[in-house]
Image 1 (spheres, rainbow, N blue to C red):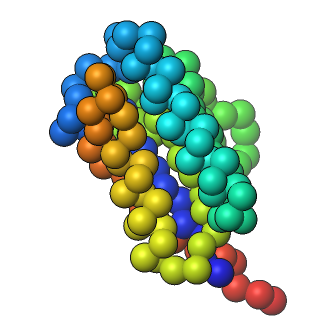
Image 2: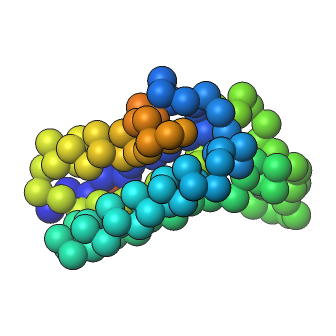
Length: 132
């Protein structure tokens, strides 16, 4: 079965442009519970490989190395906030159509007052290395 990575950035959704840390506690709880329930459903269906939220960009580091010496480690990256990865899921599903169905649910996660966020979810197939 093909695996897909479902990527979510810090981009505001069409349904909300207020950052999650500024939401009311009950809205944060509802959003987190939605994610927990979805992950449990995907796990029970045998489709969830991994799901993680990522720390904020303020603690990110960038490493550059040429393979012959030490690395250069800097704070960042600091592109526009909407370009930074907020979290991801890897799913192992029957088809791209199923991955898109799951991404549709993620995009509609509840935001302020339960209004669907409509956040963009990037869906990319995981490529495997060829067998030797």
